[in-house]
Every structure is written in C-alpha cells, then in structure tokens.
Length: 188
Image (cartoon, rainbow, N blue to C red; front, side, top):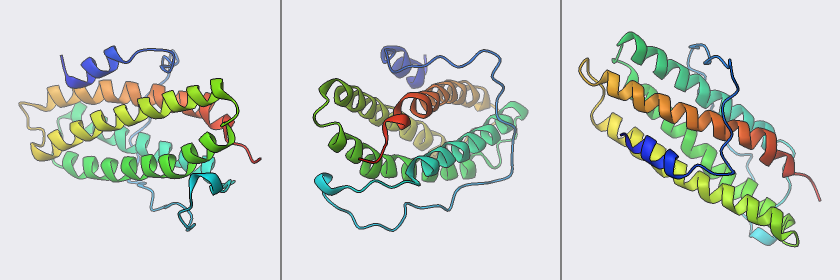
C-alpha cells in the first residue's frame, strides 16, 4: 500500500468529499503554471489581516493550474512518457507550495479572526486547516520521492498508481474548499 493510501484511508472523515460520479479528468493542456503571486500586501498580524476581495478567485485559479499540471502528469504516466515528469512535478510543487502559503497566511488567518466568536465554525475551519497541512506533507513527500528518482519504464506504473490516489484526494479537497470553505470568506 502506498503512503498516499495509508494517509488518506486513515484521514477519512467529515472533511472528505467524494468525487462526483462521471467527473472526467481534466484534459492535458499546455503549461499554465500560474505566475500569479499573492497581491503585494504587507504581512500583518492576525488581528489586522485585511479582507482581500480577489483572494478566493486567486485560490480557485491556483486549483485549476494544479489540476492542469496533474492532468499532464497523468497523461504522461498513462502513455509511459517519463521524460518530462520531473519537470512537471517541480512545477506542481511550486504551485502547490505557493497556494498553501497564500491560504495559510491570508485566507485562514483572516477566517480565524472573523470567526473568533463562533466556536463551532472556527473549529471546523481549524480542522480543515490541520487536514490540509497533513495533505501538504504527504504531497511534498510524494513529489520529493519522484523528483529524486524520476519514474522509469519499470516504475511508471507505481508512479501512476500513487499519482491517481493523490489526484483523487486533491480533487475531493478542492471540491470541499470551493463549495464549503471559501464561502465563509466574507468582508466584515
């Protein structure tokens, strides 16, 4: 059993959203790795984190960029084309790390401030944040493993299996964030 399977089977709970039936994988698209960065705003304390009206749209665009890279990785693995997998994994890592950083520094800090007097919602948000940090570690380990030892003709099947598990988990997480979490981000 891969480390993805172990992690995601042990972390199934109320934060997991099953993928929609009949949902097709994203088509393989040219590299659209986002060059977007968080809007230049000074780093401020949690008590004064401003509302950023463009933030949710930026996070959703990051999701699409990550899904596009995932689709390229999946297509390459299915066809046994391993030449560019390490490069796409590095692009995925950069996009994923940037997304997590923006989410942690801007999104979650703001939400925790505005939900400070609503303990049930605050607990839900903190639980999702903790789950995402665990997922981030597993994704980082996966990427490190396969960049250090890129898939070969002999290991591409194992790579594809682990990539599929990661893709399912990330798709479920993206669906959860976009449908239930991001709606909590409102100006106060």
